[in-house]
Structures are given as structure tokens and as C-alpha cells.
Image (cartoon, rainbow, N blue to C red; front, side, top):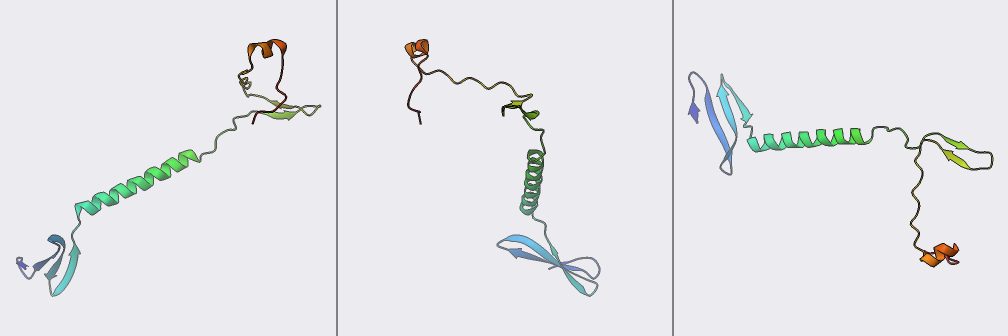
Length: 111
């Protein structure tokens, strides 16, 4: 117990050798004050930062983007026109040279 000038006294409270709070007796009243631990303060700040960063990342990720395909129109014969889209890449031709020369195609579909 620590005597303070006047009518006040402090009684520290320890748990496992670490201070966790203090009783303050002053003016005929007793109050308990918690000690702010730096570890808890850093953990709370880190948690708040992680939540804020995750919220910002989700907000950026979920933002509506313009469609990657332009106007889609249907032609008179049932064909589809995709305006504003680059032409698709051609598939590699894995046939031997003689099959390409004769323009031969496989009879069996590869799976």
C-alpha cells in the first residue's frame, strides 16, 4: 500500500508477477483502475489494422468493372457478333506434316 499526500492510498494488484491494476482509495471511496498493457494495446492495434486492410481489399475487389466484351449482336443467320473483343488465338496444329499437306483430319475425337 502506497500512501499519497492527503487522504489517498494506492494498492497494486499483480497476477503472475505482472501488474494488472490498482485500487485507489481517496475521499472515502475505493476505485479499481486497470493497467494498460503494451502487449494488449499492440494486439488490438494490429487486429484493427488487419480488419481495415481486409475491408479495403474486399471493397476494391468487389467494385463493379465494365464488361470485357463490347456489344453482342445476333446476325440474320444466327451468328453472333462480339464487337470490341480481340480475335481468338488459333489452336496449335499438332498433325504431322503429311497430314497438313493432305488436309487430313482425325476420325476419332481426342478426349
